[in-house]
Image 1 (cartoon, helix red, strand yellow):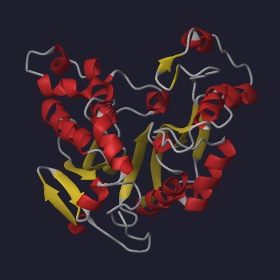
Image 2 (cartoon, one colour; image 1 turned 120 degrees about the horizontal axis):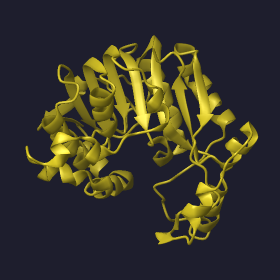
Image 3 (cartoon, rainbow, N blue to C red; image 1 turned 180 degrees about the vertical axis):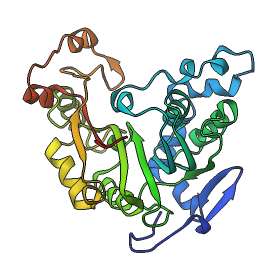
Image 4 (cartoon, rainbow, N blue to C red; image 1 turned 135 degrees about the vertical axis):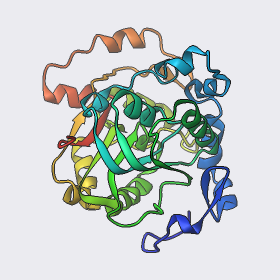
Length: 300
């Protein structure tokens, strides 16, 4: 969207069609390269289209993990049977994380806001909601928009979540988004950004960056990488750390020396070599970790 950060918007400024909120300048958004890319990816992303063929007798309908897998990382630390008033998810996709939190962790909420730039993925989010009825008693608000401004009130959200999304968003936009997430998060609220930042020191990313340097005009879906220090600086500068002072930034437990693919071509033995990496110190973890998570430590 083209609004400045100082220009307040709300869902009243959006158009509600077929269960999804769209910005009034949606046609302008549709012409953006980023939206066109993610609309295309969203049509087949991680096989999420399988839910469209799900029947009552389908194994996928009976066991949601056949569709989503079981998310790991920080989500393993998320408490069971938690209840909050409101949840905002950035890059909600077809609903993998809310489905897991609702069904696997028994998380309950009164209002859920799921934002994604891909309309096809939001269509599948609605289908997943219909098939699995996650967050069964919640007001359900899918929002199709870029991640520059949030159409929500200040101090209105208890829990902000995102999973493997920020590495797809340009750096300046990430910094603006973090300010917006801080604005809408309630004081003392909590956030979980699982596997959300790629690690700038990871050898696999350095190889990718070297290859991309030969074609600088190509706009990859994987953008800037960060160090732990830089992530903490973003959290502080945005005001997120003031809203939620108890948090941690930690490397993921996925490590890589070689990328699995380069320009879509599999790298021989990369998986086998990467699985042998067993860092024994914090400095080694921060070198070889594929990415970082940042999350509230008072999840309970």
